[in-house]
Amino acid sequence: MSTGHELAQVNIGRMLAPLDSPVMKDFMDGLDEVNAAADASEGFVWRLVGDDGDNATGFRFYGDEWLIVNMSVWTDAASLKSYVFGPAHRPFLQRRREWFEHLAEAITALWWVPAGGRPTVQDAEKRLTLLREKGPTAASFTMRTLFEPPA
Image (cartoon, rainbow, N blue to C red; front, side, top):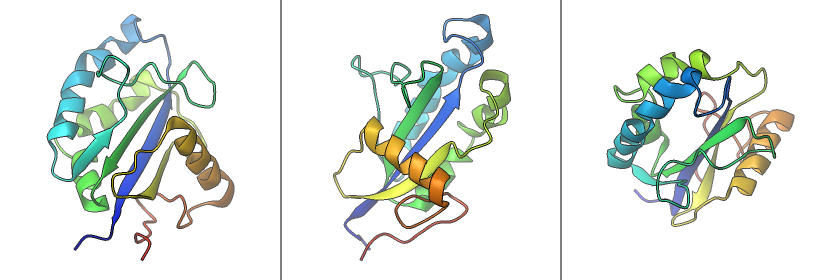
């Protein structure tokens, strides 16, 4: 059943070292494979890519050159969860502390967008800020506290 909405997600990470450093090598070497798995996943709609049509590591978040952003749109939360905890992405998730600082505040936010809508990095900054300030609401929430799409 289509609701006329799709699920947008953003997650950020503060790198421990520059992208071209030995610390980040395994992360960068696996990024194309992980992105290709997302692109091929059931329920995948769109992901933020750079001008070269590749990964989005050139985007900055909150104006911080050490924060990188991942943003995508999915048909539903179940599809997103299946990918995030699936065989291609889970190993990256398990190794995230090798590449990224532990941040005390929220680093992932979800929200509903009209079908066909593509969020901007600025939209994502607003949603993550809202989640950090207000906690989960229908406007910005987490995988643990999901909200239904608007009627």
